[in-house]
Length: 172
Image (cartoon, rainbow, N blue to C red; front, side, top):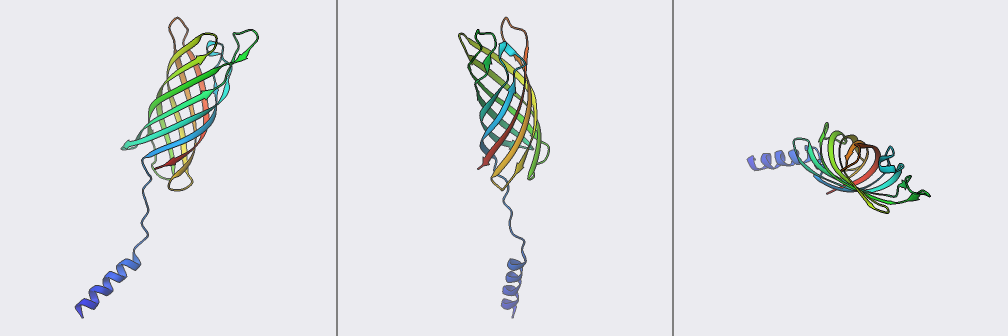
């Protein structure tokens, strides 16, 4: 009789248990589309960009993030104005305000802007950012992000840019 009660208790526990929910993975890769307003930094007009982004969850709500942007801004200093190539890789840290299916965050990035025109222009930047990721499933998120950068270069005034983007990422 004791064996039947134990078996019945085990069966009831298995059938009555709630389904297990997986935790979100801690690494991501994604693509983003956005717009970078250079505010005439080094004679560059605002431009759309495509970006490759990644993140690694550390712990306690902190993530290391990277976003590398490829863009083709107009060089307003050249005559006639022409399109040039710009690369802007960045590395930063962000703090997740919530760690659920909606993840708002704040953070800061250190970035490097290199613009290939008649001569190469190099800028180092730092700036705050904020955004939110919406999880569409356990492994896919859609996010929006805004960032303001201060760029510094030798023999140049401090420049600024405002960036907004939408990204789709997969977590693994």
